[in-house]
Image (cartoon, rainbow, N blue to C red; front, side):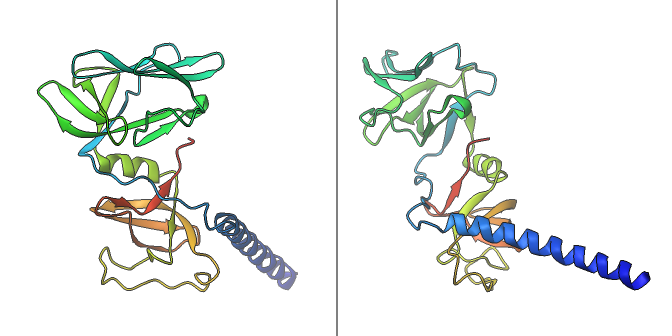
Length: 234
């Protein structure tokens, strides 16, 4: 009877381990199914981010950005048909690719709306934020509809939900420097794109736990270039 019980426990343990490995392989298969699917975040050229405040209800109130003369330049408004954007007096539907508003992050899904501006300068009373590559807007520093977020805090927050990285060019290392030993994995040859979660942020490096339960360090940026892809749906 004891032998039978031991066998059952061993069988269940092995089955559970195989099931978990199978789950990991399935997710890695999905991430690597199309090599063009992986795309890193936009480069970061600003000093910090400016985002909508946590307590601002954008479902009932429009988001307004003004120019240096305090004239409205951008208005984002939720409607029954979706999200409308007015840029310099011209109205665009949310899915209109000709919309000139190109902040660092803009997700127009009403269920998980995201809007993140890069702040490129600060005046006495305003954040100067990038609206696109050629135009800027002005947000009053005391405007309660917006908040200032450091780049590091933003990265720490959103990598908690998981993120993807290219392990072939950004390998997992034992230390947060280029001289750290690379942590090898037999699946590396098959899977280039991996996923993980943050344990710690130190300068340009993230200490992470991979989907395969490995702990090590990867770079999240190289200068202005961001090397990871984050999830924003939650």
